[in-house]
Length: 173
Image (cartoon, rainbow, N blue to C red; front, side, top):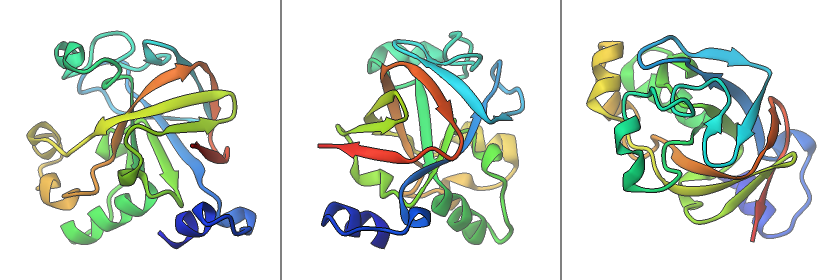
């Protein structure tokens, strides 16, 4: 992404071009609808307060031990949500993709192992979050095709605090 590459090169940006936390979603239980929030607490070793994975009730919670932190927080870009809708032939709401955080102006797929600073919260990008058959069945669409190679990333909470929609995102070295 141009904004991301310029940022890495150290060029100044207009505030609208800076990476931002665009939306926040949680679901209290597996299969429950995602709820949009303006703010949420990120808890070290757990995830987002009130979310199914923080409570150990997510569809894939039993797989959490495979990679520590991999089920704490999921992220997708706003641009990927738009691209997914285009690939599927009709717009799709970000909440339907069941990712916790929607970010903008960030080349998320290249950040494995990096830390994101969002306000006081630090998230470590630990793995990719490819689309699954469960999501396709839930939506009745081929989301695997819609999100192919742009499905987002998973992150572990390294420093807890409050996430607020609209906050700028800094990428730590």
